Image (cartoon, rainbow, N blue to C red):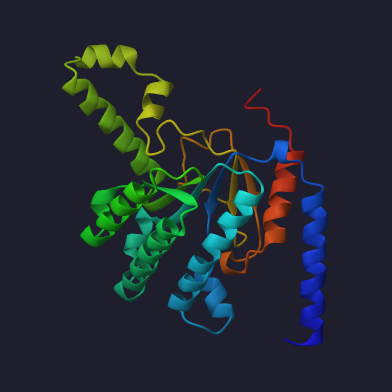
Length: 257
């Protein structure tokens, strides 16, 4: 690292401390969703491989969760693999699934996070299903940040699964179709989502400069604030995170009013 890079790094750290010093923890979002975008483009810009980009993105996760812990965030939802990602070539998808499985094991072994899977388990390999179940069981007692790992996740699929679950639950209770039609409301559907009784995201961060939802938590983000960051996910820094929190705190949430 040359002198210019060292000086730049020092200035960024000093700036981050200044932003953090002015951060009102009472205004910090309790639930943050993250669309971790840009691994492949980061790797391409660095002259490296796609797999290296995914590994670099995976290595950023624990660092990010550490920042969340420092600022009193209570729930984090990490979008690790969408239902659309299964259309990628096997030479990319195979290693990516392995990297994601390693992420889940690492989070569970850390001891600071409570891991919860959101997504359709049936889409995932049997080995990953076991890893997710073991991670949830091993961290069920942890009194730390609830980390939702969105793997095999799609927003439309979640809503379809919620409606299916609601109907099957009603059938098991002997409720007729007419009765369920009369009783169905927003809260009923919400209880059958992957996130169940969790609070909806207050803030959703998307990296890489893309400004779209891509189907992320379509139901839960009806009143969420969005923060779009130009930097690719593997290069996401604490100062970028703090800027997102500062931007969120400066907004006046109207909830449609």
